[in-house]
Image (cartoon, rainbow, N blue to C red; front, top):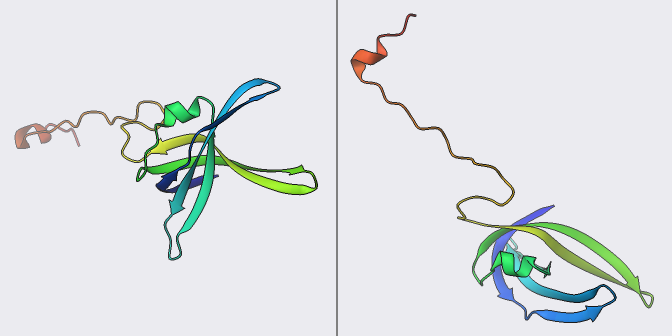
Amino acid sequence: MELTGTVIALLPEVSGQGKNGTWRKQEFILEIPSQYPKKVCISLWGDKIDQAGLRVNDSVTASIDIESREYNSRWYTEVKAWKLDKAGSSQPSGSGNTALPPVTSFSEDESDDLPF
């Protein structure tokens, strides 16, 4: 699933120690434009925090996973971003070269050389 909007807030980075080692998480608030704009809190984990380099007012498209889990008979839902594409970036992450081939222009006398 993808969400496109504007980063309106960056929450402080949080880190801790788990059974698999040290972890890092940063959450940000994405405002999705519509007649009634919606705000979604999205988490970035580990190295993705540094790779994203998010700032307030960045326009981004976030590829997300939504997951809920139970703890002490209560349910918690988290929206995790696994890929972020900033608007206006020269090349979206994960895609190949999207450059178009050069356009060849013809003068009037050259365009009449076609056999049909």
